[in-house]
Structures are given as structure tokens and as C-alpha cells.
Amino acid sequence: MPTTTDNLEALSTALVGQHVARHSDASATAYFELGILLAHTGAEVPDWLMTTPRWARAAVAIGRSATRHRLRESRSSQ
Image 1 (cartoon, rainbow, N blue to C red):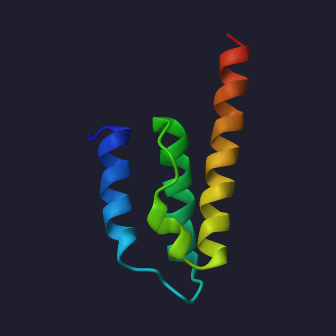
Image 2 (cartoon, helix red, strand yellow; image 1 turned 90 degrees about the vertical axis):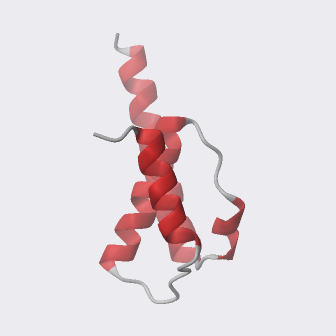
């Protein structure tokens, strides 16, 4: 099974050229998952994300924020 870093690189590579203008559940999920992977790897938000639609940036922010919150909770409960 690929590592989280491998998943992040693959998803980022797939999304970097797309910049989907229309919202769809599939694309929103992909951007949300990108946010999750960014949080898990501790990676910064890629520069190219600033050229995506607002809903895509929001999906990344929500995924990243929720995951970071969950990671902090799990560390504090140990």
C-alpha cells in the first residue's frame, strides 16, 4: 500500500492541471482528501491551489483543518 506521502504526490499531480471551474461531488472530495493528506504529512498548501476556484480551496482548508484537529485530539488523549 502506498504511503501517505505517495498518495499526496499522486493526488496533487492529478489536481494541479485540472482547476475544475464547476463544482462536483467527485472534485470536491478530491480537494478535501488533498487537505487531509496535507495535514497528515505536515506539508504546506501548494502554490498552485491559489489558482483554483474558491470552493476547491475551501474543501482543502476544511479537510486540512479537521484532520489537524483530530490529530491534536488523538495526541492529547495518549
